[in-house]
Image (cartoon, rainbow, N blue to C red):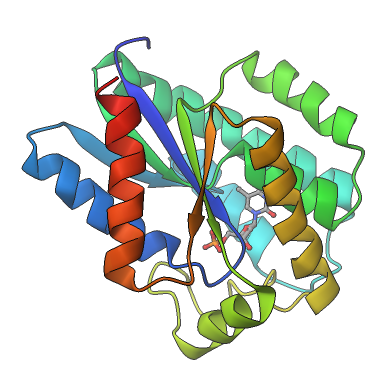
Length: 214
Ligand code: TMP
């Protein structure tokens, strides 16, 4: 597992993460690096099944703690089946969301006890964490407007449960991600997602290369 490199993309809705992941992967592949792209919830056969349970249906379908446990069941499967084998093979693994999304969405957003989230992380994955986390930050209004305006091609039409949660929820998420970044500055870099696609990519690539080439 120690040869590879694990990069996670985090942030609220409409920050352009999926576009930026593709641009980053292409840039790294152009440097002849072996890259795989994955996502959460999902990224393995079992975790993709759990994704359907999480993203479809009524906003109040799951109580926060239940949702957190479902997310971690999916995460354990994703890491064991996909992330660790790729890292063992020396690959750069780029994941669209990971554990910080649980702390932000279920912890800060839905008020699930943050120590409980940390305890479940430890039970599922020990002290495994990404080598680098990029947090795509932008004001809630801009993010939600973008998310509504351009449908995400990676998501089915029914998978909009989180986008339908209220504005206050999304503001708590944003503050949650920023608090995580502040608490772990060595792992997390905040990317200004209000910039143009090109400028955001340039900031992303430089943050990644400064750690990858370290
Ligand atoms: P998205 O990444 O395509 O926006 O969709 C994933 C949704 O799942 C997103 O709204 C955030 C949510 N989510 C959580 O609530 N907790 C988690 O731990 C993860 C990985 C995602």
